[in-house]
Image (cartoon, rainbow, N blue to C red; front, side, top):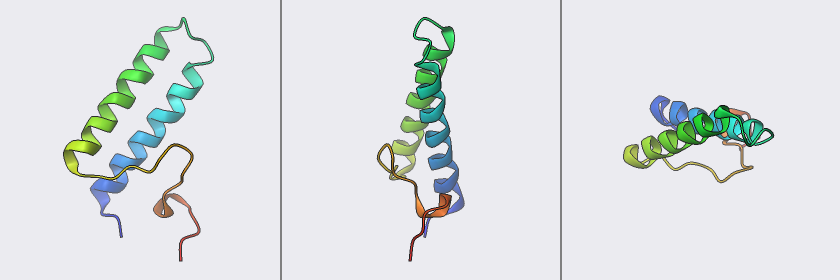
Length: 68
């Protein structure tokens, strides 16, 4: 089971990944740099907190996966 803090960190990483994917559609926009900075920050927080972040494309069970 994932605790609240880990769940929030994973959610932040997933949101940052989605924002980066969206920002990449306009590579010259300032949003791309901001999205990349947020993803790096979220991943650093996860690493420092000892939170294991699922690979790109995986949805954690607590975020709607069909875990048993």
